[in-house]
Amino acid sequence: MKNYKKNIHARHFNFLLIVIFVLGYFVFEAQGVFFAPSLYIFEPKNGDTFQTTRIHIAGKTDAGARMLVNGKEFSLKKDGEFDGMLTLDPGYNEIGFLARDRLGHETRKVVKVIVQ
Image 1 (cartoon, one colour):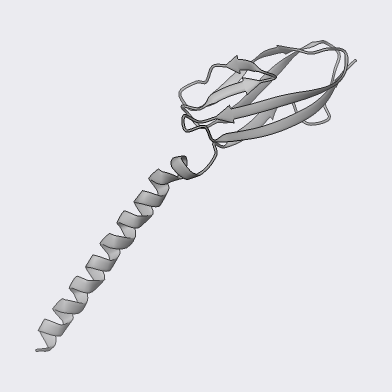
Image 2: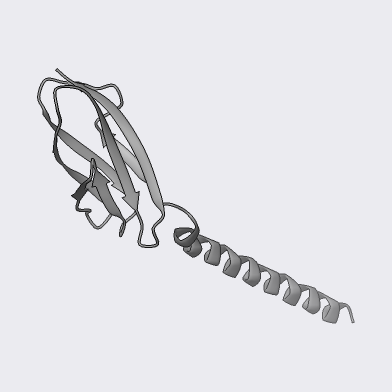
């Protein structure tokens, strides 16, 4: 009788582990449906000062997202990294970054720089 009860407890425990694993996997996979894409800006940094109007832009977002910088589309590498050149006006500039996934979720960031 004791082995039977141990066997039932082991089955319940195994079933619970499988349910937790399946739910965890679902949440991990579904995060792209529920959350906006990540967006990391490597260059430029907020407050940077430049001597030229043409500056290097670099960052990373989720693979498969669409990346716009000041309205200009930047192509993504397979891992979601992007980089390129952007022309700014002399003086104070706000650079708008927009990452949009295929479901329309957006992440926006603004970096403020000065071109002398």
